[in-house]
Image (cartoon, rainbow, N blue to C red; front, side, top):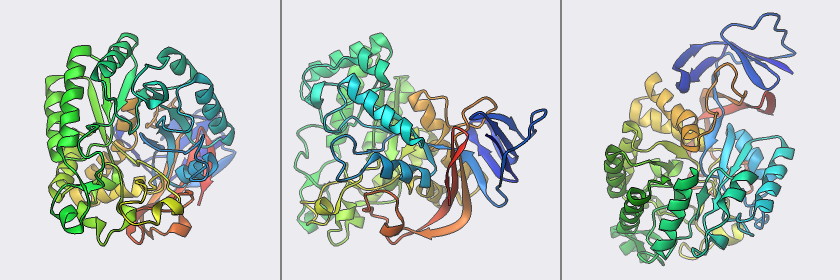
Length: 428
């Protein structure tokens, strides 16, 4: 199919484009930007007048819950949520059931996702067998099966020697290690940020040093091994200072932040709102402000949805008993635009930077040839209306997980169409 997207305002940070241009697509690839190729005859035309056209979003953390947790979500529901959110490429952590530590499981997941013909799915393989932190997995075989990196998800490695050996092995073969900095002992039973709000509510706390102590360990092991490490879901001002210093030192690290951490603080727990139970917990306002500054200065490389669908039986419980997690695929773009609106007055430069954090910058972390609209690249495209304000309502979410701390909020920017590899996968 040959597709012509006309009259849209094109924002492509990777190629420095921020102007009105048409896009021409054939055989799943972009064959023209601004000027049609010779003898191009469109079989379908999308009039994008009044819409913004950007690369399809690249999400660095989206739990699809398959295999093993289909009662929480299915590939069908979550990839449809990705389409409604304009997400065309997503990375999924290995904490499924069974864990993604065998090539056959990875191949099955990739095949299931491919047959649905929606977003491109890039699994992370388990760093250790069963995520138990003891024996290393067969990283070479998992890479051949389709893994783009290796992670422990939220399961810490207690034995630092195992983590060092994993990094040394990964360095030898050029694999990326994805780690969430979290000390396995400090705040192990905590459910909220350690501070006056947790104390007043009587909730056990997770101190900031649970993140910083783990970061010190990870950074020392990076210095020793030279491994490329991606730090997942940074949450504190002190942690970001360590990352900033490590980047200046030249260590091969990148990091991301969950979109909801850009806007929420521990005060948003309110009167024990279990929708605000997330991991790591929302921290103080100074931490939230530090996250925004780190996004602006490039310390944080990308914004992810940290999409973690949770069913009613595990969420509609007292705060301390509720499972952590929130749906985010359909909110990712709007929350990034909200950051641009609040921190950059909605200027074109601020919007461009927000788009980059969920497209080209995120793709660069993974090493994907995605997140851009250059001629010859795969036609993964998102069209949205920046003027539309929409209310976050559970019934309107395609995800099987309906729980998010943003329920009832009014957000800006609504996805109108999502194109994956040249075919229109979603049209509102």
